[in-house]
Amino acid sequence: MPHINPTRLAQRILGGGRNANSEVSPSPTRLVDMGFIATGRVKIVEPRKHTEQITGRYVTLSHCWGDIEFYHLSNDTLAHFEDGIDLDKLPKTFHHAIDFACRLGVRYIWIDSLCILQDSTKDWLYQSAQMDQVYNNSLCNISATAARNSSEGLYVDRDSKQHWIDEVNLNTANGADPPKKYTVLDLDFWETAVGQAPVNRRGWVLQERMIAPRVLHFCHDQIAWECWEMDAIESRPNGIPLLQLKSGSIVRWSRFKGLVPSVDGKALRDARLSLWKRIVENYSRLRLTKGTDKLIALAGIAKIMSRRIFNGRDEDYIAGMWRANLESQLLWRVDPALKKDKTYDFHSDRPSMDEYRAPSFSWAAID
Image (cartoon, rainbow, N blue to C red; front, side, top):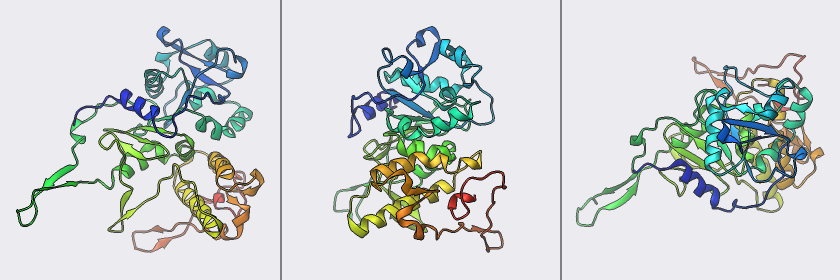
């Protein structure tokens, strides 16, 4: 299979589909301005203070922070960052994301550690409450999917052998009829390369991935992408089949992005509950550095679901559950873990008293 230019591929993805638009959406509080990239520097800008010069779309970045120390925004560095940041002082993942965004013709990028004051609880709480707008209004989300920390970057040496042609011609049993073309499917690819990748095991990233109109995943051997219409990879640019292997059987699976119930009455109520249940179950398996972020890191999804799916108000959402269906949502349990002796362990860690995160009746109260 011939090598695919990632930039051209991304431009094609961003230029088509039902998400394509040229409207300028409201900007986040801060953005990284790449307009002076030729000088080897970028700078932090606040669009609301410079309305005459802040125009155009922006992209966002999802990444694993890791244990490596790197440049971040604080009250002490804010003035310096507004004056300019040398690119060589940024970690490789940021450097690559900025380079790729420039190749797409985008001037601005939003990166959490550069756009949120890391030493201000007030700013962190305010910005955390805006995540639904930050990601939903972006052109796309660039995901450092395979990178375990900020030093590994987006670009890796890719093995062209991984881009194998998955169509084969097989002779018929009697040999009289011409060979038939069959497609060979790797049912584990998406789950292995994307679903279980380092970045997608982070709790915060689930809402980044769900809310953004498009996500470009930089995996080890291919770029994968998600939009409202489909999930796709370089070797299957027209979309991958919605199939997976479960308990020895091939079953269809539903995509997160674009899930909007379109039925009425009781069926709509059931569809809403089923959708939220899937989100909570998947989210509960992910990692959070701080347990107190349990509900905060899911708030963006809840806001969008409240507006678009539940047709409700913010007060209809209570500690990770929905008022209209509260009784049934109280019937949660810890997913049992299978022990070596083939018995199940229903134990789950409870936070200490000084780490309140949710009322005890909520699934969010424990890990």
